Image (cartoon, one colour):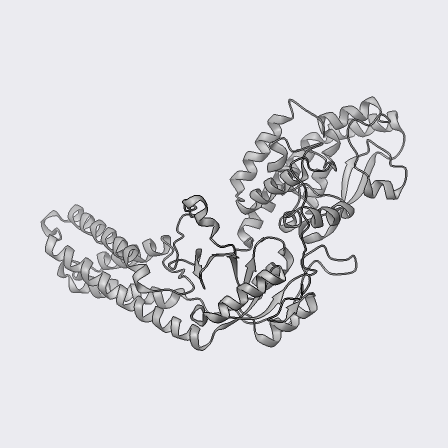
Length: 495
């Protein structure tokens, strides 16, 4: 648990970076981020997995019915069908790439067909040794099913590729104007990708020629509705447009992160970058190449992950508030006796998607005025603090009231630390990646804090750790961070 620091980053000079007006913190009078007009959202594209599932299922039934030992036992035929479909789903074979081909699927399909038939043969031998599946029948079944499945997939993929060329998806490109125009031009020169850029979303035009540059949320909404946008290309750096990307994803748009660097960063120093499990170019929807660029699907945080995180927040914060309520009462009474009235300190902070909220703490310092409270860093070593206030800061007990923020839903137990609007606006323009921290709910503690980035430490380093936490979020990671935070409280170093 920690308070933020305002000391300039010692880890290098900050860089200037422009952000789109549709992705930075919204003004006080606006709603919570980017919104589409009600009732005018583009329909989501149909799921591409159903034809592939039908092709694989038909191939399994054809192969099973051609083998007498399996044909006479309907339960074994059903087991073969369900087994193949389950293996293919586990291998992400029903999440095809943007430009799928049957040759890309061939090794994975054949391997899973072989595994399913070997398991079927073992099951048949265990149930009835006298009726074990002959080797010849096993080979014939595998070959027939693999051939039929690949032929069916080739037909499905071929129809999809033709549809992409005839009816390309209208696309927006988000990023710095010059780079985004270059990426858009490349996709227009390669219509086989099935993506037709119709506009660029950027903070300013920069005098770049090409597609119209959209600089406001209203212009993006108009382009989305008039062109029926179905896809979005996000040029590096990614993560700076949380509210916009979330709204586009909810409207049915497929989001792609495009690495516009050349040569690709995946081949930096001649060593390919490792891929997540299940990702293969051209086969799954996770990663691949489009128009020669290295691309990766962007998955906006799903409801299940948000639900699990919220349930953990409610359970832990509620239990802690019940357990430590006597301690909170003692701290409040002692602070009232030592420093007078005004025990609770309330301050505006910026939370998820740039939404402001009121953060609660025990008051350990009294600012001279509202301007100082909004623009001055408050550190633990200030001389005007009483001994008890120093104790609260050093032990992080002043942060415990933020459990109410967690219980109310303004914050999470784990996440990037929230900061005041003045510094959020300043750091968002100074440190690349700072605005991206607001993709996720802010927290009492986080990955940056358990790595010692608390107090007078680098803002740039905090950005890096916070974004790494968001990019690799898991519920177990939250549990580990909470355990390490609890362990660090026995050796307090100050806030």
